[in-house]
Amino acid sequence: SMAQTGLNTNTRAVIENVLVIVFSLAYLTFLNFQLMISTVIFMLLLPLIVNPLAKSMRQLYDERQRLRAEKDSFVQDSFQGAEVVRSFSLSERLASHYKSKYNSLLKIIKRTLVFEGVMMNVHWMIIFGGDLFILGLGAYLVSKGSMDVGSVLSFLIMFERIMQPISK
Image 1 (cartoon, helix red, strand yellow):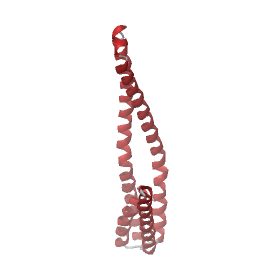
Image 2 (spheres, rainbow, N blue to C red):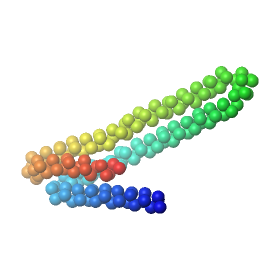
Image 3 (tube, rainbow, N blue to C red):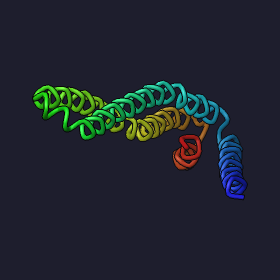
Image 4 (tube, rainbow, N blue to C red):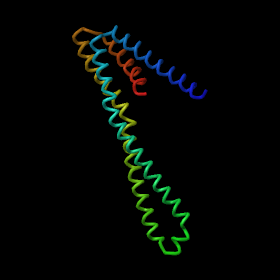
């Protein structure tokens, strides 16, 4: 029942996104076919840029999870073996080993946070680049008389509208 609800919800969202893209592209084709084709080519670059970055991000998450599990396991074992540590005066060695595990985890967390910061902004950089592309090509087409300024503005608005479902 719960799986069916999730499937129904996700199917509805996918269909909604596909319809937004299809109707938006149909409208843009009506405005100017040349700019629409150029914009579609630009939008197809999104997966080429984001997928390799997402793969690297998943690898960082996996590494962070592995290091966190190792650290937690070490801490659990240390608590369970506290008598042995005290009996054999291993507290300095234990502290050194824990600090080593903690520092390696901290290092990967810092790398992950930097990468997350970059990934959060990639979407907006692509939209900004697309806006500049549309303005540039649109200005060229307006100067040639192939299109009017209102159509260029429509392209800008629809580009951002189309990019939202694609980026999801």
